[in-house]
Image 1: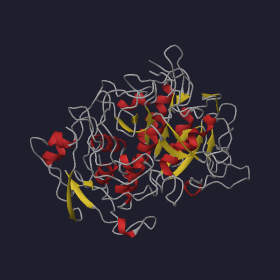
Image 2: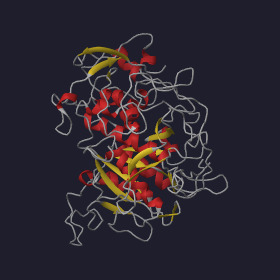
Image 3: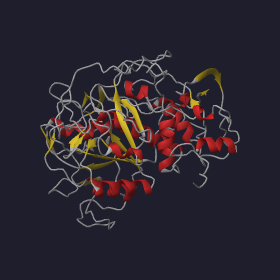
Image 4: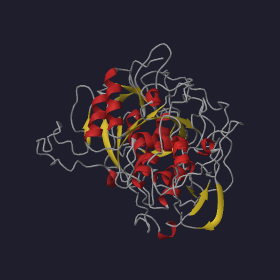
Length: 494
């Protein structure tokens, strides 16, 4: 996010009842190769202005960010097998209820090992830098589908996949046919190029609206909102495209590509390549600053009321009761808000990510070497903060097609947040009945947490260009804040 210590802004951050038994696809999604469908099982303070949490200035490839204010180690087996669900017992159910959120009711024919070490088995402990650790789709999606405490085992790199997808283990979920199909993700940002060839088939279309008739057909209060809405101050129209060729305008299109770029043999691939993107334009951008920030709370309510199940907010925003009420409204409808933590290198997340103690998810950024990005805000000291980290440096994704490059890299917690939004979409495609509390709990407790040596353990390792996957552990995620020192101004893209 953007903000600085002397001038605080809102900015984009280029950052129960028993559930129905989820259906596990017996056959591959037609979107992916048949050979990938069987997997190996492996077990067990305030910002005052709006700004983008993108840490890359497209001129020098570095975003200018603003000031805002026991690990799960997988033991792999070489034996192919189908996961066999067992019984959930009362003792393990009680262990699962520890903390604010709960796995209770996730699936009744599922086992959780009950023992003196049950609390350690549940997942990562909280770390003030990384929060609960590196988001892990192989576990999170398996748990969402009812296979706690197991994880989908590693699969070979499919090709055409950026290192970020490899790190968050998106391909392991794809191999089980969990690709985000049926899930709509709202991108509240600078606009989305809905005609980009890597996005156009994955753009949400309002089923209740007739294009161009100038009538509010679905009576939702927005006329001809075919693909979303433009909430920019003084605009209030249905033009969701980036408004100008200013480099900052690419922010929303880049975020959308990280979430749901199509798996089509060219360009890039999103974490959830069959999810739909609802384009909600919140402001124009000039010189990495918002020029007409609109009503974020209204955009959140629009997303909830029109069927989005996940909302990505790679931005920072002024704290207000109106915003908190909107976040509460989303949570009450089991819509998950994913917010970039901010790019000021501060000890804790900025708004709206700071509300992830109770509402949604906060996301920090790591680089391809597994280190915390020097610009990323940390998790803070409150273990209620549902904070994870994801790739946010050198992230390759889509750019508006009226730019000279249709793809480019950006840095920022703005780029990390859409990786997590994509993983949540994968979880909900595995089990659409998950509650807000269950998504938060599963996502954080399945994350690969830092060990006592302050490092992560993961098998995901690939080159930044999307090279072949290695079965070796990835580099340690060091606490040292290596990299370029970035001085961020409020109101800029993060």
